[in-house]
Image (cartoon, rainbow, N blue to C red; front, top):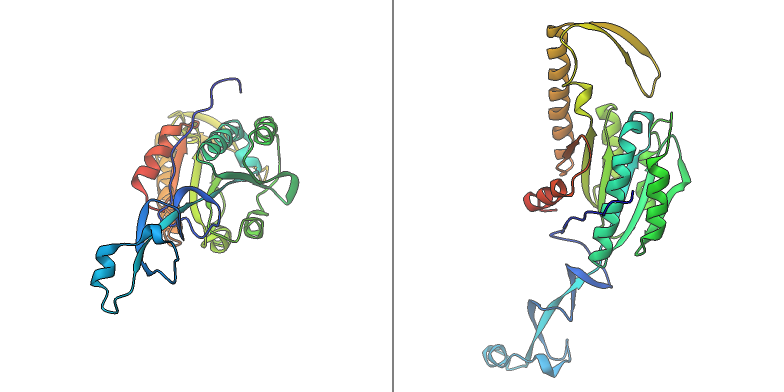
Length: 279
């Protein structure tokens, strides 16, 4: 990965409580520039912030001071599906991991990574930090990783995330049941979750009209041979369209809006997502 890392801009409307100053509007009163409210001088003893007009209008004739909203630091995590069906997507996912980490560091935030396969493995757990070298090493291993695992550990990731609200990019192709999807999303509702649905359009849009094709399930390892014909091709395309609608409905039931990515990673796609969504 010698090419330049592209970054994107993200923001949260309500990033949550954090005592560390950063680039995001927080919930604490402090040394920010965004006016929050007036308080009594006794409650916030800083004479430099006395508001004479508000003090004159106070019915109890007490001094009022301006209190400002302190910007806070955010923690960003990428949680990636490490199952066998994601095998062909992992090089692009590793590129996104580098992009997300670089974006977080530029914002003064912390970045971490969790990989969910059949079980949670230490080599795919990167605690949140603000240095890029460990992320580069992890991304390099991720791009070369080959697996035959499932994603059974994804419902168990919530305890590994911070208690305070953080930004979570949940990366998967979501080729599992909607019931399993609910067990994954339910523990994550206290965080700002961006479900990233990673698909390869060649799986359904580049099929021939006629011919014998052998299909193999990457996770179950079961395979079957089908006679491709125009009607079957359209059924497969419609099945993907229906699956997209089902996933969108499933995410929205938890207040999450999915981001569908096809054929690689582009930072401008993530930029456009945050310009449209308020998390």
